[in-house]
Image (cartoon, rainbow, N blue to C red; front, side, top):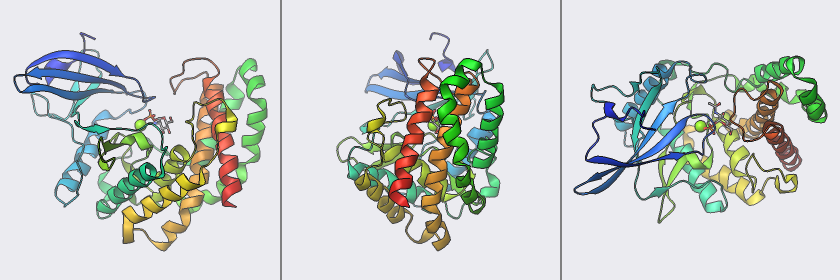
Length: 342
Ligand code: GN1
Ligand code: MG
């Protein structure tokens, strides 16, 4: 950890604690504490995973452009913006050619890992909806597509099909039943063409932990994890909210009896999102939301199973079956969502 490139940043006082934060599946993150005469200050240091974000400079440019746009509006919440390095950049590059950025840690805020109360689901969905509303006039042509075809479900399906041909016999045998199920659900892709008009600024990772909440009031404080800010459709972000808010357990849960859609949370999520975005959503976009959720849940199951069949190249895992279990979990969630919405 002594190799962390903190010397690139003009930090105050003395760094006296660095702890890893291990919740995300993609980037490496550390909480850094500096002791100063006025008391401790905390920061979030994060390495950008360049095997996934192959254009880290473009990622940071998207984040800073959106931050500048929101700063020029009357956006009512904290705007996540990287702190400048000693040379005024929004990131630094270490001796191993790794990219890092530093964010202020927002004191008195917390992130909940699960939407266990309808009020939390409402508040986080409202905050994401409001974010989209304030960005409705941002020219998406200025954003770079840093991960191509991120929610192009038909292409995710095609990768899945390819991965079946590449998998080991052992993994194929273990995944056989789920592979059949996912192949047989291909008809869901018919909803995709209506969702291909990417004219919105989309977050692309709208789990509840990506809205910091006020530690006392649980009101939204800040939208975080902006690496995937890209052009997209509102239905993508709504879909990922449904996928991650609605079930009482997360995608790692293996007790599938616990994987279902909680109707009250689903309703709070929908209401929060629609009240947050207000009249900045069109009738057509509103009609696409539920189809978007179906596709995003289906897609996540495809993505986890693809990774399992490819030997866990993308998502970090703690045991060999984990991506298969995650794919099963998401498939189970999809079944319940379809049951409740058709
Ligand atoms: C990844 O690392 P994390 O949790 O922020 C992934 C999302 C997936 C999610 C599933 C860039 O996000 O798309 O939905 O894992 N991000 C990327 O847990 O692939
Ligand atoms: Mg993320």
